[in-house]
Amino acid sequence: MTDVLSIEDLWVEAGDPRDPVTLVRGVSLSVEAGSVVGLVGESGSGKTVTCMASLGLAGRGVRITRGSVRLGGTELVGADEPTMRRVRGGVVGTVFQDPLGALNPLQRVGDQIAEAVQLHRGGRRRAHRDRVVHLLTQVGVPDPARRARAYPHELSGGMRQRVAIAMALANDPSLVVADEPTTALDVTVQAQVLDVIRRATKDDGRAALIITHDLGLVAEVADRVAVMYAGQIVEKGSVAEVFAAPRHPYTQGLLASRPALEPGRRRLSAMGGRPPLPGSWPVGCAFAPRCPVAVEACTTPPPVDQSDGRWSRCWHPQVESMEGVS
Amino acid sequence: MSPVLELDAVAKRYAVGGRTLTAVDGVSLRIEAGETYALVGESGCGKSTLARIAAMLGGTDEGRVRWSGKEVSHLGRRRIRAERSHTQFVFQDPSAALSPRMTVGEAVAEPFTITGRSGDVPALLHAVGLDEALAARYPAQLSGGQRQRVVIARALALEPRLLVLDEPVASLDVSVQAQVLNLLADLQEERAISYLLIAHDLAVVSSVADRIGVMYLGRVVEEGPATEVVARPRHPYTQLLIASAPRRDPGERVERIVVSGDPPSPLDLPPGCAFASRCPAATAVCLTQAPPPRELDGVTVRCHHAA
Image (cartoon, rainbow over the protein chains, first blue to last red):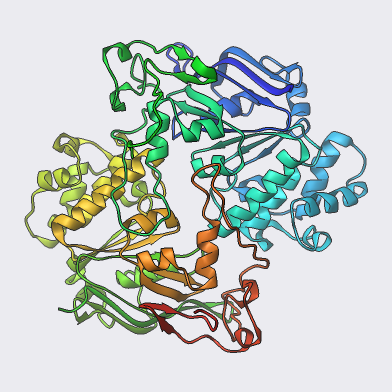
């Protein structure tokens, strides 16, 4: 399979260049055509910065200092603004956590989708009316011709997120990047929107990169997962393998600390400590201070272990299954 | 002994542009000493309004609120203040609940300053698992999890009988949520304190609650022992909530329930069951008659068809 997106050894920093804070260190990640990759991490892990910096959306003062981001053969690191603009909303569609922030409150949603189409395909906005209705149908908006005339505030949260997804799909992108696309939604709506995302990506052969803190979301839609901690990927692999037998102690702890939906009060398996913030990452393995199996060697940077086709950044990856850990 | 909290047919209505929005519609519930009662439901169901009524932060338009047998719903602002130590409120966002200009020590000591009572700030910090050296720090110097511990320490200062916890872990990192939930369980064991927990995450609720009340559009549609509600949900809305929860593992098979339609507007509630428009099991009676509460194996359900 060909890689739609290929991030190689990406380093990102922010702040005063003479005294920068490192946000991302050496992230390599690829997304194949037709596959969904979940990028998981807690606050400050660098998951959002990795994606935003790759798309040139990270904002002022955030700089890529090393590495490469290739999207369908185009190098994005160092690319000029016209190239980036062609990429965003064209080859890449983006969906964010809060659909209200992504939509203009003063414009009918149909016009906004038409504008997204027009930006990349030209022509008059009215000429794209059929495309708008088609896109709204695709994301499961009932009565699309009528809903196209609604303003964002007239729609429910779930409908707004569908509209945002329709906008992301406006120019038939080969990659969809979604940052916490269901976090702001109610649980019954989450399941519906996830279904829309699944259909718009996997089922249509599109690649997707989903950034989230929610392992449940990854289990629902992703084929592959990468787990970030303190600016680095600490484990990556197929969702089935990583969930069934996580190699990195952080992945293990994260999976074990999720409460299960089952009857009966019980004590939860909790990791000690908290995720470190950029600027205060421990030397060596950043997870070592919280790690139940850390040893002396962990104060030096851990190598990547790639035995039996797995990938983890740990001095002693856990090869036993999770049995007994909970 | 009287229950720590009793709500007796409380209701809250707001006037919105000449119409009436019913946020809470005749809810009754009781919480015993040392018990965790979880209210679950989606945004707009009235759970946060009900939490504020329980803590007497917003009054009730109808019905009664009793704290350990004492009716407080008719008390004015000044007289309620004398009763405040009974019930304390913990908000979702600990950053908003703490003054940025007060040190941790000052924040935790504030209830003592206000009431003129004496108290042991280092002991409170210890109780919530914080080093007393943190007393000199400001909230901005703490992590989200530490801030929420400070808020809990302050809420415990006056030794309340009940803590109302509004989404206490929703804003925390996954690896920190479990720590705070375990802390709440430990504090409950040590102090026999009761919790009214407002949450949307059923997995969290199932692991900490003794009783669960499921709210939909201002009403509790199902209520009972948590194990029973989770294992055998009887109301179609509870069934939908449980079926919608994200799966834990990629291979897990989940029976999804597909519903169509949006919930009705709280400004314009239908005469029958409020869930009927989305309910896969709805029949003619559901559209015309509001289902009365029915008792099934210790669970109270408002559904014509629950069995």
